[in-house]
Image (cartoon, rainbow, N blue to C red; front, side, top):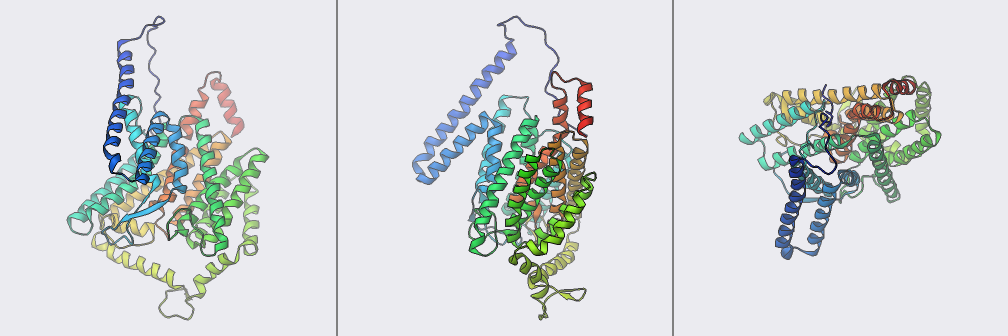
Length: 494
């Protein structure tokens, strides 16, 4: 298993005060010149395009420059900006696209541009400081690389044989890779418990904000969705995100040794649960069941979890709001007197679920036409199910690599939880693991692992979890803590 390699170099000969090696002088000069050159090019480009821009575009350009400069100076601040833009940035449709897998135009969000700007600033920092690396070696690198490669190959073949519009397929694969860039950026930058703690607090704060915004939608009726989603919201997306975040919060609650923290996590859990009920997302309700049941084996020594879950299950019929109950019963009552619906074990399902099941059946038949590498990304018509979409778009090879990636994430999260000595790390890893289980079930009825509002927080948190063993190793090696004392502390906290 490849872990982060220390940047420490062998001891150098001592130098007298004031003496500077020639290579250090050259590197220092380069570090001063390159930013100035980059800034000069940016200013020249801005001066050339500003006369033709509207006031709104000018402000957007100025904001982009500010983000670039801030990201260049501080990667921490850049990642905080990214955390809050994940759920709090508006989206807009910029045009139509070709491809049977799409039902609307290309949708871009502000955080897409933020991520690109931060990425460029990171590349600029790499050009100056050779010790920085963009693709840190982690256990997920190879599965990620293999999956992106399969997506590119299947899409290229789909374009060659006329199944995929090359531009559309390319941008969708680029979108998949964008989520994983978040993982590499965080994994490469994260080095200390304090960083992890502050990032986690920012993620929880963003979750609290979007939950409150979601609650403000309840009096207006209809289904609750994430903020700034345009005219048509996506409650299923918001529900999946809330289930994932609630699992993380529950993991932190279970592991926290302090009463005031458990109270805070409990209140935040309730804050998230209220809009989850009103999303009326059946895929999210389904995902919540295995997510919270998985806490029984993830935290096997917490014996109070089982009675707590039983109490919650018994109380749900009484505390769940009317729209939630109606949405669940709708699944089994709406198609009762219809002939054009699907029946399972003699129970007629609603028209929406029936159409989804029929699309799965059709896809399972069409997949055989291109069984090895599939139709290509966006080469098959829209299917609202992650696993069916993966196998139709990327074939048998893509499905195998996808499940290897999922299994690797699961293994690394489980190992991080088992090895973690710090209660915060243990709670984060355990909560992430439970949330991941929930998302695997959420993906039965949604394209969960390509949805931006779920995947950006997911990959950000995945990087934090994967880096937990390395962070704890770095903390153990801090000056003043001997190996014996570190081992003793680890034993006491386990």
